[in-house]
Structures are given as structure tokens and as C-alpha cells.
Image (cartoon, rainbow, N blue to C red; front, side):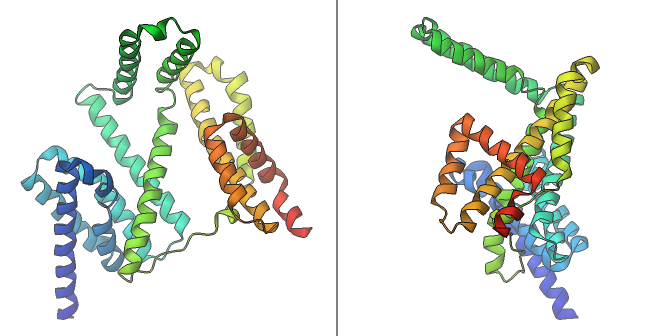
Length: 315
């Protein structure tokens, strides 16, 4: 009993010190910080996965207090973001949850912290982060045009800049969807990196299903089509807020359909035993070439709605 308690205290102290060191590297060494920012949740994730969330909360508070002492309150508040995702994902590791459950929990914890940060900026400091970013992008576009008179006489270049300007202005409407996408992407990177680290420390880590076997709920295709109808025929009548809600739901569901389409493509080539070259190329082309992306999107909708995979497998 005493040995276990001593070991828990030692691991907690080591996790706290390691977190503070990584935070200092991230804050004051820019080049290393690009990589170390993704390692910040791992110390508390490791400790919580072994000792549970109650002991993890003690390490959480210790990291927060020491961060205030060695840096400042602002960095300590930022540290809460990384500590929370580490605490949540560590607890799910202890409960032996699946990889997708780990990703969803990490995404949700990211969203909660980002919403709190957004609320603090908006209500306490009267700063809207989305509007500020939008204004900075618009200023950069205007500055580029002023410094390059040649671009002002180029019709093709001006069309591209006008498209960039329109996209920047629409950023505020897409803020919720972008929030979800950024949160999910960061949680995914954390899960991949922490899996590589924690497996070496002999912490049981859930395995991902092969990408070709990823499948979402069939009901999502009806949500997608229903939202598409509402967005075009009802959304404008409900005002800008209604349009924004429909547009963001549509954007998130569209990403899901693209993932479904890519998974179907990998499944198709796997069943044909043709390797990963062609599906990898299609994935790259779908990112770079919009028409290919739309084809992948349609494949995802068809696969989700008509279950193409079972037909391919039966043949």
C-alpha cells in the first residue's frame, strides 16, 4: 500500500515537471514549440490512465499552480486547454474505451475550452476573435494589392483576390464548423502521438479500425439531404442566424460524407487487391482538385445510403 502511494506521488511529480518543461519549450523556443505543442497533454494523460481522474485532478491543479509561478496567468490559462484534453483522454484510456470514443471525447473537451476562451474574449475583453482574424486577413489582402500594382491590372488575379475576400467575410458564419474541425484535428493528432509514446511506456492503447472499415450511421445521409433542403429553401426566411446554423451543420456533414467516400474507395481497392497506390493518389487529388472532392463526396453519400460495400463484398 505504501509502495503504491509512493509510486503514485513520484509519477505525479514527474508528470507535473515534464508538463512544465514542455510548456516552457513551447512558449520560449519557437522552432521546438511547433512540435512540442502536440506533446503537452501526454504527461497528464499518462498519469490519469494509470491512477484515474481523481488523482489526475491533483496533477491538473499542480501543473496550473506551478505554471503561474514560473510563467504568468495567461500561459497558465492556456495550459488548462492541454491539461483538460489530457485528463479526459487519460480517464478514457483507464476505462479501456475505443479509439473513436477517445477521439470524440478529446474533440468535445477541446470545443468546451475554446468556447470558454471565446466567451472570455468577447465578454470580458470585448474582443471577437473571429472578427479580428477576418479583419487581419482582409488587411493582408489589401496590403498585397497595394504593394503589387501589377496585380491590380490582372483580371484573373483580381478575381482570385475577390474570392479570397469573400471567403474571409464568410469566416464568421463558418466559425462553429471550423471550431469543430480544428478541435477534431487536434484531438486526432494528440491521439496518434500519445499512442506512439504511451505504448512504449506499456500503457494499453486502443487500436484504430482500418480506414477502409470506417462507416458512419446511415441516418446521417438523411440529415445531410434534409439540411441541404432547409439551407436553400427555409434558411433565408429564418434570418442570418438560421442560415448560419444550417450552413455549419451542412459543412460538418459534408466532411463526414467525404470521409465516408474515401473509406469506400480504400475498401473498393482492398477488395480488388490493388494496394494503396490508387486510393492514396485519389485522396491527394481530392484535396488539391475540387471536382475530385465532389466525386468523393457523392460516393460517400451513395455508399452510406445504399450500402455499396456489402454488394461489392457479395460479388
